[in-house]
Amino acid sequence: ILHEGRKPLQVFNSETRVMERYLKFYSSTKDEEYLDELTKSINGFQINSKFISTLFNRISPLAKQNRDKKIDFSVIKVINESLDVFKSSFEDAKIKVKIFGDEKIKIFGWSEDLYIALTNLLENSIYWLAISKSDRKEIIIDVSESANTVIINFKDSGPGLSDLEIESGAIFEPGYSKKIGGTGLGLAIAGEASDRLNGELSARKSNIGVNFQIEIMK
Image (cartoon, rainbow, N blue to C red; front, side):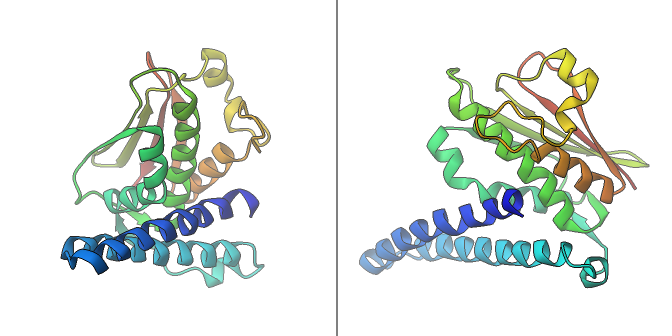
C-alpha cells in the first residue's frame, strides 16, 4: 500500500500546483488553451482516484469479486495515462519520452495491471535518470504485436543493469534495491501485474540503459 499509494499522491500534489497556475493564467487571459490543460489535470485526478479505490479493493478478501470485468483496452492509451502521473518529474529532470506503436493494439484484461507495471518501471527510470550526469535522458516505449502476442519494450538511457542482475533475475525479488531508501518492491509488483495480464516481465541486455520487455499472450 505504501509503495503503490505514493504515485497517485504524487499526482495529486503536483497537479494541484499545475491547476492553480493554469487557473490563474486563464483568469487573467481568458485563453481557452489553459482550460484544455485544466481538463487534462482533472482527468489525471479521476484516473488516480480510481487507482486508489482499486488498490484498496485489491487488499480486500473480496478483491477478485470487486474488480470490474476484464475488457479489451488500448495499450497506448494506458501508456499515456501512466506517463501523465510523472509529467512534472519529466520536466524537472529534463527527461524526453518517446512512444512508438499503433493505437489500435489492444490486450484483454484489467487495464489497472498494465498501469501498475508501467508506473513502476517509469518510477525507477526517473530515479536513475534524474541523478545521471549524462546529457541524454530518454525513455522509449515501443509497442508491437504478432498473431499471438503483444510486446511492450521499455528502454531508458540510464546507468542500466549488470549482466549478473539480468541473468540471475535478482532484480525481480522483493527486497532487492540499489536505490537509497528503496523498498525493493517495484519490479516485483510490476512482474505480478504482468502475470495477471497473462504476460511476463523480463530484463534484456542493452548497450545503453535498461531494456525491460513485457510479453503478453493474446
